[in-house]
Length: 538
Ligand code: G6Q
Image: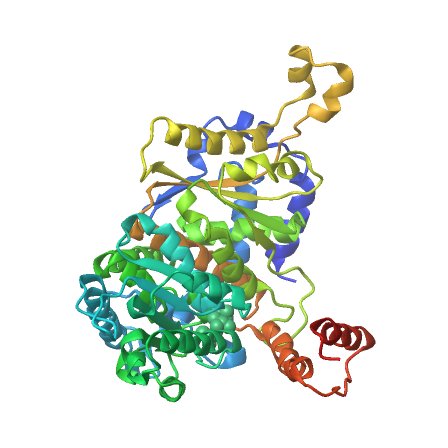
């Protein structure tokens, strides 16, 4: 065990009962002192159950875990995704033109910009109406077909940046193998005005390829089954030119990326094509610049002023010492309604691992469960548990000083609620306060707010492509920090494979017109038989 880890265990025992009220009373400047403004972001982390000693021990843990070396290795293009022997270079996707990041002896930044230029040209043609559908009509609807990393980033970014999007185009995202997803997306759409972006790194994913084939059928049946229509209505985003060509998409209409871009880190690669079509190349570039600003901050800022490092270390503090099992992400911004879902993949697929890089079983917890909803809606549902339940749930509140839709007093009310929630969680409401208010004795326990519930508050200027890039990069690097401390591979995802393989066995068993020979466990066998019966096959 690392010395700083044991020191933190000991320190936890000493401060676990110390109340935030006390910490604030002892240090009236705490609210300003425990905050960092950097890389265009402001983080108030004063409402965390930490002291100076906690911080210095956490920073020692980062040093003992080789976080600096890990960061350098990522930016250097080392194959830090050990189980897949791959470099992890999403930072190259947002590197400015003219800079250099080397992968296998080659500067990849010019390659990145060549794809960005091709995307920009395409996006401009669709937005300007120069790219026409098969019958000569303008494209009015764009449908991204993809799943996981090839869906969650594009949906989240589209929703987040909708304010900046071209409203003469509609955008849809089809991911689920459930046919309802496709059926509802195309309802009322005219194939002659619809463009599909098939986004898949591998171009072999069951859901995406099935939806893409269904899309092709839908399109062709609306366009007299003229196969030459495909070229005007389908483009691909992939690393697999062979499969793209096999599907029937002209590879001149393919936008590439590379094996050193992980799915959940691919939003700013060509996987973001739908986002670029929506918001335009300049706004997309602004988003990449936001990412890049935080990359540089992460790479160069001293750890005690390094936002992703601090957020990552705080996450470790609650996860591994307080035993917190979950963490809530609560954006007070309606446009960020898919941000928690996006973060769920980023955090849990990255750090939900049970072995270290060398394959040894960990004897500590790795990623907490991330969840959340935009505020204030959550306040009227699950916040009850955060305030008075029995579990400790560290919260990240995200708020913006300026709204994109000024409507009377709405925004002040929204922001007042974020501040109020963080205050209520931290300081609670004591018995003495309640008695002073004349609350009946029998109700005092019910109405008690113990407080001492920790939170971060991120206060940003306004939601722009640039700030979105900064926010996402902040979480990406916080996830990296946590993974480096746990010594795990944050960039593989073997845990999704087994279910996929079993589904491939079960599909023919559900479809077969004759009784299949079933060799699953008795529960799976019975479910398959029952499904077949309900479906009316046997
Ligand atoms: C992300 C994962 C996963 C992946 C999807 C889609 O890190 O690898 O979510 O993005 O399975 O894969 P394809 O892009 O290859 O279709």
